[in-house]
Length: 317
Image (cartoon, rainbow, N blue to C red):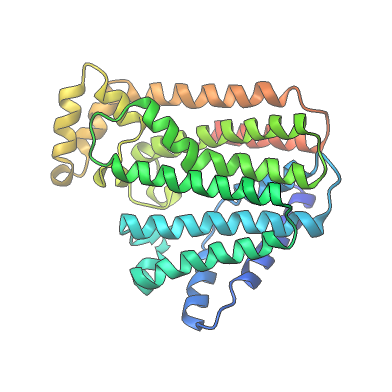
């Protein structure tokens, strides 16, 4: 939960309850695993954004909560599929679905969640919203394909990376807050502003996550540090280092990562100043979100967005 107030706490509890109800399936083993996955935590940023976006218009809990839940279920589905591709043993400090049930069943679990999400949305969404959601999911999939194709590629550019995280992460942030505002009857000007805020915060969020893959606490991050680099996924700090005078050292560090556990890579990225450059870019996206936020009408939503942005600034690099 992001903001400590009674309204948001109450609404997010409703999301949590609906999440658990939605996971009912004939296989008790699958149901138990999915419920454990839900209860393992997660920031619930996306449903938080949907709720906040809705407060800019005519807030109706009976509409917003199912929409927020459906978007969170989509996010969960992408995480399950990510873990299959990455062969991840853990997620948020607990055994991943694929590690518990096997890859084959895990694929169906992810597909099951996508189906559940669209069943919820079909009850409330008009054609235009369904199209927007479908486009967002397609963009996420395209970006995941890009990431897979760019594995172990030392020629990957900053532009490639930004396009990748724009689809992989930021698009669902933008969709979450914009769809909430749309269902609350906001005008297009407000919806577009909120969408751009969501995208900017999503970009900053992913860049910070990629920095924390080098310098964070494993328990807090929820996965082993440098796990992306070990899998050949080169994020912004490495890309910056590869495009610096430390290029040769960076390549060498990548080559020996399995031998030294990534120590040389961390030292090289730090020495090259690439982590600081990555922090700088994250802060640019945060400042962009703040600038747009200042043009929004006064009220609960504007204050809540401010607090979310401040939480991003407080996240330990």
